[in-house]
Structures are given as structure tokens and as C-alpha cells.
Image (cartoon, rainbow, N blue to C red; front, top):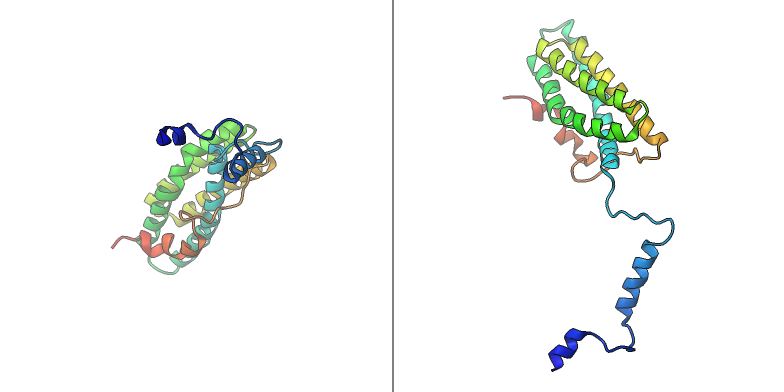
Amino acid sequence: LAAAAALAGPPAGAAVSRRAALLAGSWSLAAGPGAAHALFESPTQATVQKLATVLPRVQSLIKEVAEVERQRAKLPPNNEDDAYVLRFSRSVLEPLAEPMVEAGAKLGGSAPDLSAAFGVHVAELDAACRAKAADRERKELEEVESSLSGFLELGKRLKYDTTSRDDINSYSGSTGILYNKFLFRAG
């Protein structure tokens, strides 16, 4: 009998516990006017943040490829440099193409064109790496950067958060380890 009474809850007219009152109050504040009604960010917002996280890495890779291009005028080419850019393209840039197309369709404006250009330039970057042409690699990386920057600028105008996220998958302190040239080199 006591177990059945405990399962039934408090009798009608009984005082509500502080825990239940606080829980109900917090939910009413969270669902109040002007509050966000989603517990998670939209797929478009997640894609924009991924792009914002990748942009500085692309910019640093452009500097590295420019240095390789400068060295190739004086030294014999090192095939590992091209392989590094190819692996970066395959592991970091290519997985962003499809989500970028989906987000571009939702953003509208010039976003679909920018996402299509991104996909084309990533494919051309792949071809440049296979041809071992550092000048073409740098040019395509600059075009990829331009597409990413334009997409993020459009996202910023549409009030999306375009700051990169420092989470476990994009922790900036591990950049030297995760995106280190030696990690992607064969051998």
C-alpha cells in the first residue's frame, strides 16, 4: 500500500517540492519569448563553423606551398610535399564539399555558386598535386580560400556564427600535431 502511494505521487493539493518548482521555472524561462527553441545548432550553422575552422589551416597551407614553390626553383622537387597537400585535400577539404552544397542551398544568394566553385577547385587541387605542380597547387588553394572566405562572409551577413570552434575535433592547441606536415607524409 505504501509503495502504491509513493508511485502515485503527492496527493492533490500537496505542496510542490523545491526541485520540481525550480525545474518547472527553468523550463518556463528557457521557453520564454526570445529564447532559442532548439537544443542543438542547425546543420547549416555546424557547416559554417567547420568552414571557419578550416579557413586558417588553408591559409597556412598556402604559405607552405608558396615556400615549396620557391624552393623548387633551386632544389630538386620533393614528392612528399605534393603528397602532403594531396592528403590534406582528401582528408580535410573533400569531406566539406557535400555539406557546403547543402548549406549553400539554404543560405541562398551566391552561396550555391561559391560551394560549386569550392568543389571544382578542390578537384583541380587534386589534379595539381598529381601533376606535382606547386604553382597550380598554390593557385587552387588560393581559389579554395576565396570560396571559403566568400561563403563565410555571406554567412556572417545572414547572422550565422562564423567563428571557429575550439573543441576536441578542432582544438587549436593540437594543430601542430593534427595538421603537421610529418603526420601526412608517407614513410
